[in-house]
Length: 161
Image 1 (cartoon, helix red, strand yellow):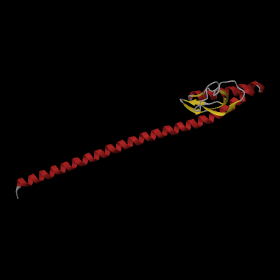
Image 2 (cartoon, helix red, strand yellow; image 1 turned 135 degrees about the vertical axis):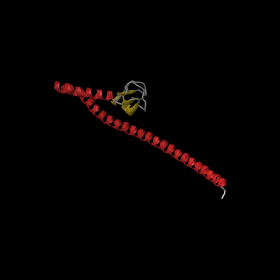
Image 3 (cartoon, rainbow, N blue to C red; image 1 turned 90 degrees about the vertical axis):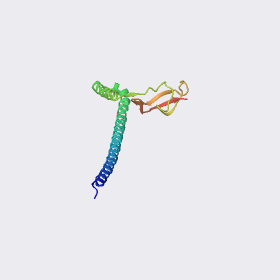
Protein backbone atom coordinates (compact mmCIF):
# COMPACT_ATOMS: atom_id res chain seq x y z
CA UNK A 1 0.00 0.00 0.00
CA UNK A 2 1.25 3.41 -0.98
CA UNK A 3 0.47 6.04 1.73
CA UNK A 4 0.93 8.96 -0.72
CA UNK A 5 -1.68 7.59 -3.14
CA UNK A 6 -4.06 6.92 -0.25
CA UNK A 7 -3.69 10.56 0.90
CA UNK A 8 -4.30 11.82 -2.65
CA UNK A 9 -7.32 9.58 -3.06
CA UNK A 10 -8.76 10.75 0.26
CA UNK A 11 -8.04 14.38 -0.67
CA UNK A 12 -9.74 13.95 -4.06
CA UNK A 13 -12.72 12.24 -2.43
CA UNK A 14 -12.88 14.99 0.20
CA UNK A 15 -12.76 17.73 -2.46
CA UNK A 16 -15.45 15.96 -4.49
CA UNK A 17 -17.60 15.55 -1.38
CA UNK A 18 -16.99 19.19 -0.49
CA UNK A 19 -18.07 20.33 -3.99
CA UNK A 20 -21.15 18.09 -3.87
CA UNK A 21 -22.12 19.55 -0.48
CA UNK A 22 -21.61 23.09 -1.78
CA UNK A 23 -23.82 22.32 -4.79
CA UNK A 24 -26.49 20.86 -2.47
CA UNK A 25 -26.30 23.94 -0.27
CA UNK A 26 -26.70 26.26 -3.32
CA UNK A 27 -29.68 24.22 -4.55
CA UNK A 28 -31.31 24.31 -1.09
CA UNK A 29 -30.65 28.05 -0.83
CA UNK A 30 -32.25 28.60 -4.26
CA UNK A 31 -35.29 26.57 -3.17
CA UNK A 32 -35.47 28.63 0.02
CA UNK A 33 -35.34 31.90 -1.94
CA UNK A 34 -38.04 30.65 -4.34
CA UNK A 35 -40.27 29.59 -1.46
CA UNK A 36 -39.73 32.95 0.22
CA UNK A 37 -40.66 34.81 -3.00
CA UNK A 38 -43.71 32.58 -3.50
CA UNK A 39 -44.86 33.28 0.05
CA UNK A 40 -44.37 37.03 -0.39
CA UNK A 41 -46.42 36.94 -3.63
CA UNK A 42 -49.11 34.90 -1.86
CA UNK A 43 -49.22 37.42 1.02
CA UNK A 44 -49.57 40.34 -1.40
CA UNK A 45 -52.35 38.54 -3.31
CA UNK A 46 -54.23 37.78 -0.08
CA UNK A 47 -53.88 41.41 1.07
CA UNK A 48 -55.10 42.67 -2.32
CA UNK A 49 -58.06 40.25 -2.27
CA UNK A 50 -58.92 41.26 1.30
CA UNK A 51 -58.90 44.94 0.35
CA UNK A 52 -61.11 44.28 -2.68
CA UNK A 53 -63.58 42.28 -0.60
CA UNK A 54 -63.71 44.97 2.09
CA UNK A 55 -64.26 47.70 -0.52
CA UNK A 56 -67.04 45.68 -2.18
CA UNK A 57 -68.72 45.15 1.19
CA UNK A 58 -68.47 48.85 1.98
CA UNK A 59 -70.00 49.76 -1.40
CA UNK A 60 -72.90 47.34 -0.79
CA UNK A 61 -73.63 48.80 2.64
CA UNK A 62 -73.41 52.37 1.36
CA UNK A 63 -75.79 51.58 -1.54
CA UNK A 64 -78.28 50.22 1.01
CA UNK A 65 -77.95 53.42 3.03
CA UNK A 66 -78.68 55.43 -0.11
CA UNK A 67 -82.11 53.77 -0.25
CA UNK A 68 -82.73 55.11 3.27
CA UNK A 69 -81.60 58.58 2.18
CA UNK A 70 -84.01 58.36 -0.77
CA UNK A 71 -86.84 57.56 1.66
CA UNK A 72 -85.96 60.63 3.73
CA UNK A 73 -85.75 62.77 0.58
CA UNK A 74 -89.24 61.63 -0.46
CA UNK A 75 -90.64 62.29 3.05
CA UNK A 76 -89.14 65.76 3.56
CA UNK A 77 -91.62 67.66 1.35
CA UNK A 78 -94.50 66.37 3.54
CA UNK A 79 -93.03 67.61 6.82
CA UNK A 80 -95.06 70.83 6.68
CA UNK A 81 -98.14 68.84 7.75
CA UNK A 82 -96.29 66.93 10.49
CA UNK A 83 -95.99 68.04 14.13
CA UNK A 84 -92.88 70.12 14.78
CA UNK A 85 -91.25 67.48 17.00
CA UNK A 86 -91.67 64.81 14.30
CA UNK A 87 -90.28 67.14 11.62
CA UNK A 88 -87.28 68.04 13.81
CA UNK A 89 -86.59 64.37 14.54
CA UNK A 90 -86.74 63.41 10.86
CA UNK A 91 -84.53 66.31 9.84
CA UNK A 92 -81.98 65.44 12.57
CA UNK A 93 -81.85 61.80 11.45
CA UNK A 94 -81.54 62.89 7.81
CA UNK A 95 -78.62 65.16 8.72
CA UNK A 96 -76.91 62.38 10.71
CA UNK A 97 -77.23 60.01 7.78
CA UNK A 98 -75.86 62.60 5.33
CA UNK A 99 -72.96 63.34 7.71
CA UNK A 100 -72.19 59.62 7.96
CA UNK A 101 -72.10 59.36 4.16
CA UNK A 102 -69.90 62.46 3.89
CA UNK A 103 -67.49 60.94 6.43
CA UNK A 104 -67.22 57.90 4.11
CA UNK A 105 -66.39 60.18 1.14
CA UNK A 106 -69.84 59.78 -0.43
CA UNK A 107 -71.08 62.89 -2.19
CA UNK A 108 -73.92 63.62 -4.62
CA UNK A 109 -73.44 63.78 -8.38
CA UNK A 110 -74.56 67.08 -9.89
CA UNK A 111 -77.12 66.23 -12.55
CA UNK A 112 -79.77 68.89 -13.30
CA UNK A 113 -78.57 71.34 -15.94
CA UNK A 114 -75.57 69.17 -16.85
CA UNK A 115 -75.08 67.45 -20.21
CA UNK A 116 -76.22 63.83 -20.10
CA UNK A 117 -73.30 61.50 -19.37
CA UNK A 118 -74.11 57.76 -19.45
CA UNK A 119 -71.26 57.10 -17.00
CA UNK A 120 -72.96 59.34 -14.40
CA UNK A 121 -76.62 59.31 -15.38
CA UNK A 122 -79.23 56.68 -16.13
CA UNK A 123 -81.87 58.10 -18.49
CA UNK A 124 -85.38 57.15 -17.42
CA UNK A 125 -87.11 59.02 -20.19
CA UNK A 126 -87.31 62.25 -22.12
CA UNK A 127 -88.37 65.54 -20.55
CA UNK A 128 -91.62 66.69 -22.12
CA UNK A 129 -92.19 70.34 -22.96
CA UNK A 130 -88.89 71.53 -21.54
CA UNK A 131 -86.99 74.28 -23.36
CA UNK A 132 -83.54 73.09 -22.29
CA UNK A 133 -80.95 72.29 -24.97
CA UNK A 134 -81.09 68.77 -26.33
CA UNK A 135 -79.10 66.27 -24.27
CA UNK A 136 -79.34 68.29 -21.04
CA UNK A 137 -80.51 66.69 -17.81
CA UNK A 138 -83.75 68.45 -16.83
CA UNK A 139 -85.05 66.41 -13.92
CA UNK A 140 -83.46 64.17 -11.31
CA UNK A 141 -85.72 61.32 -10.19
CA UNK A 142 -83.12 59.64 -7.97
CA UNK A 143 -79.88 61.30 -6.90
CA UNK A 144 -76.61 59.70 -7.92
CA UNK A 145 -73.54 59.50 -5.70
CA UNK A 146 -69.78 59.32 -5.89
CA UNK A 147 -67.70 57.15 -3.57
CA UNK A 148 -64.29 58.79 -3.73
CA UNK A 149 -63.58 59.06 -7.45
CA UNK A 150 -65.87 56.24 -8.62
CA UNK A 151 -69.61 56.26 -9.24
CA UNK A 152 -71.39 54.54 -6.35
CA UNK A 153 -74.79 54.91 -7.98
CA UNK A 154 -75.70 56.78 -11.18
CA UNK A 155 -78.39 59.44 -11.06
CA UNK A 156 -81.75 58.49 -12.60
CA UNK A 157 -82.74 61.41 -14.78
CA UNK A 158 -84.93 62.78 -17.55
CA UNK A 159 -83.15 64.32 -20.50
CA UNK A 160 -84.29 67.10 -22.86
CA UNK A 161 -84.85 65.99 -26.45
